[in-house]
Length: 265
Ligand code: ZN
Image (cartoon, rainbow, N blue to C red; front, side, top):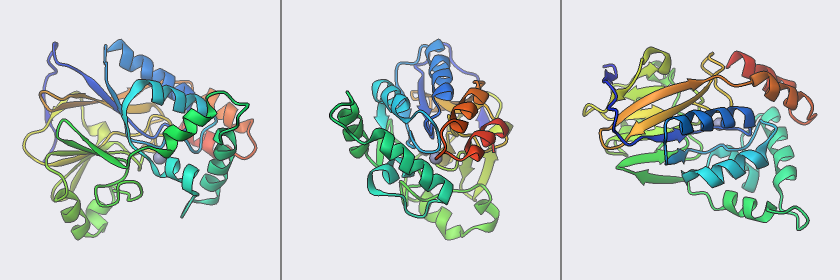
């Protein structure tokens, strides 16, 4: 059970799905340029626009401006309702982010930005696909980890696969790849080029723009040909060292958050 590799049709309409930007402006700009180079007119964002990174306001503004559907991530949720179950490093970062983004009458646009983040939806459907940040069972918070395929609770996968029809797109773990019923996981690095929906339900993790964790430091996102159910991963180089330096210059952001960008882990 591996993704069915196909050739991409020249004239197909292309859309893009991004996730887990985590306030990494350099990565987001590089991904947007890559998307624009392909003439893509519709972008979906699966959440975690903020948290960990040094440029939350700029990233929220780009996502607000460019993405047609935006789903709430657990860091976006923590910004509004407080961090629950966060590591001290993630908590400190979200508290710094809240100070940066909290609306102030003298900061132009801050109210609109905050209202946008407050009103994000936890799930949506698009072209018959389910869109969530984490998992269909718990859209904002539940992780679907690759290692659970062997070690996890089989009931979890049964419940997840029974809760959508064709494809469910997720982010949250920052590890791109495709889960099939079984369960079975195929990491992004083993998928070369476009692949198609072939009748097997799949949970497709689109990876992370701003903090990849699959030991490939390049930004990750997915393009979709919705008419043909064809998907393709893209990895995009960006100046991770510039983001790291910016993180170093903000004391509430732990230096490890910068260092991990160079390792992609
Ligand atoms: Zn995330």
